[in-house]
Figure 1 (cartoon, rainbow, N blue to C red):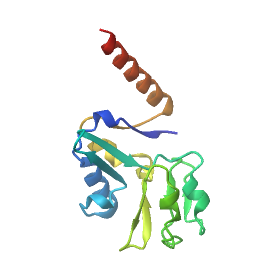
Figure 2: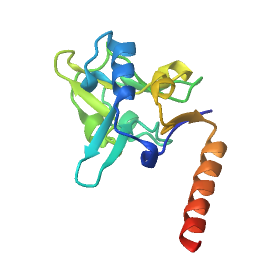
Figure 3: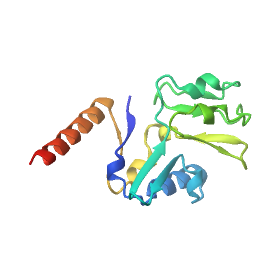
Length: 155
């Protein structure tokens, strides 16, 4: 099973991921309708993509009173059955990542479903801040980056 790996240090804040996601899912270019949102701290210059990380224990699934949230066995993504969602927002509160958003006009929640195993946001990320990869590769890449940072401070 692959995961969506985010390297915030590589994020330029261009927000193409938001636009691509919103258009892919809603056929409208409205960033808040994207399942990924980039939060920017202008004082520090840091941009951080925020998206559902498909938690292993998924507190959103546990708190949903109507079983509108479920795990897709093929992609391991937590998905929303819109017809079952009553808009109670318990999942929004339970999400530790802030990856679930309530959309008032739809009276339901939206969240990343990994585009059924082919995340559009990854394709549009010009800096490589978003990758869809096996967890082992993601862990190794993070370790390599950390080692390079340590090496840079020593030299």
